[in-house]
Image (tube, rainbow over all chains, first blue to last red; front, side):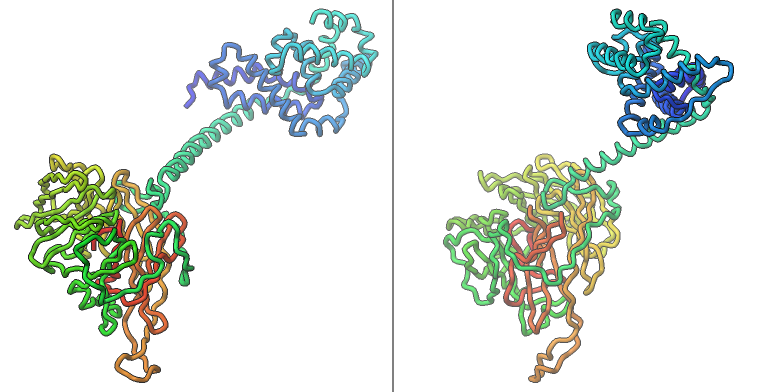
Amino acid sequence: MRSDADETAIREFVREWRPRLTRVAYLLTGDHDAALDLMQDALVRVVANWSRVGASDRPEAYVRQILYHEYASWWRRGRLRNVLMSEVPEGTTGADDEEHVLRRLVLRRALLRLTPRQRAVLVLRFYEDLPVADVAETLRCSVNTVKSQIRHALGRLRVLAPELTVEFGSDLETAEVSQ
Amino acid sequence: MTGLKEQLGELADQARLDNLDDQIIAAGRRRRRIRQVVQVTTVVALAAIVLALVWVPLSTGSGRPAEVANSGHPVQTTVAPVQTTTPPFEHPATLSWLPGDLTLVDNAPPLPAGAVGPAVAYYRVGDPQTDAPVTSVGTSAKGQSGGVVLVTASGRQYTFTPPATKAVFTAPALSPDGRWLLQGMGDGTMVLRDLESSSQRPLPLTIEVAWSPDGRLLAMRYDQSLDPQAATVVTLDLRTGHTSTTVVRTTQTLSLAAVRDTGVLVFARPGDVDNSPIFPVALYDPSSGQSLHDLTLTPSGTSGPALVTPDGLTVLMRRGTGPGNLPGDIMAYDIASGAMSTHGLPSPIQSQTAVPDPESSDPHVFVQIDRSDASGIVAVLPQGVLLAHHWYSSGQFRSDLELVDLATGRLVIVTRISGVLAVIGAAPQIYVIGGPPR
């Protein structure tokens, strides 16, 4: 039986992590519904394994691992492939100007044309701003593999979205050097 | 790098942030409960598998599936019985020490005083001119008067000296290795004979005997006092010739049923108390005579007396009321673990209800008789349970020794018997080494 304190902690944890994981999931899947599903699958696993999560020194690392492993299993099972093939139209908020909308569309489509592993390393490294070592730990691979994946991912981005690389080309070069 | 980070952040902010907290928490709880149930189920299933593997069927001699609590009340997990009305005849290589064909004789020469070699069986001859094998309780006059024939490993047959009296221990006893024969003499004594030599040792008349499975110990009960619950057992070590005496006091009237290789004495309800609903078993320390284990089985639906196997480890009971009131299952109770297993036996061969009238010269005149098959446990061997099956077919009384593999329910004929075997009660009167004395 769980204590009331546990129930409160779980609820707090879900409330805090749901938006964050949903955004990451959206970057990984490129689809709103798939992102919600992926986030939900990950958090359900967290709740089901709460004793382990609560006892962890770095619960955020544990949660992140769950999300990315779930994402990897989606890909292996072909579920993610179907999502990415469906090419759901991008919605707009109306408040964004046309340039921002166009930029998001280009980035989204470029991300979707990367491999799942490349997409994951980019999100972890550049969106979540994790050191390469933490990226490697999350994805359970070597640091060299992460560096290699980042290099290949950025190279692909230059080809797939040259307009974006022009916009932040120097940033990419900095990122490659800083690896 | 900030440019890419900002672009990714801008894209991520487009994610739809539906509030699914309650659904997520509820689903997580459900998954956790399911996992707990699966874990418990898995543990139970693994435990059951381990128990099943440990209690492998009786034929391997290492255990049997759990089926009953220590109370002795059986729970049904019956091995499916096998229908083998025409079982194939294939003499098992593992029982090659038994003859494939045995012709019963009632005029065998007397057992000589010299060495004859180890024996494998003995039997009592029936009388085809009487109704001995016909009635369900028929008894051959020769069988009752002690016409016992010894079968040696070389196939020779010898008639025994008639037993001393009918009131006390009358059946001869063979050691499990077939080397030693304990037989009653006409003068009220008994003789232990070494069949591989001419040596013999006189012994006082016993009322019950048991051999240890390794053939080393011969336990003999001598007590004939007015107190049926007092028992004096002398155990003879055949390798050293030493004897030890154990005085035990049972809580009720029990018989010496077995002696284990360790010397532990096993007492059980006498086999002739058929109608008792309980079957007490008691184990006694050979040195002190103190009780080691005392249990009372109250099996329901059993027929006939229970039987402690010669190794003193298992109690066998028969259950069922098939054609001819024959028991259909063997229930094995492991004394050490308290586990009960049930093993289906092959359905008996259907009896004919009409036989040629022996008083008529016309072979087409039949009379209706109340007869049935008879099937008794002869021995519990490592290969399975050996049954003596007696029936009437094609105008003849037939007998077979049949081996039932309790693991598979497979039945094979070990020995085809030509001649009429005596039947006492429902038990064809044949004994093989390793089986309980008759």
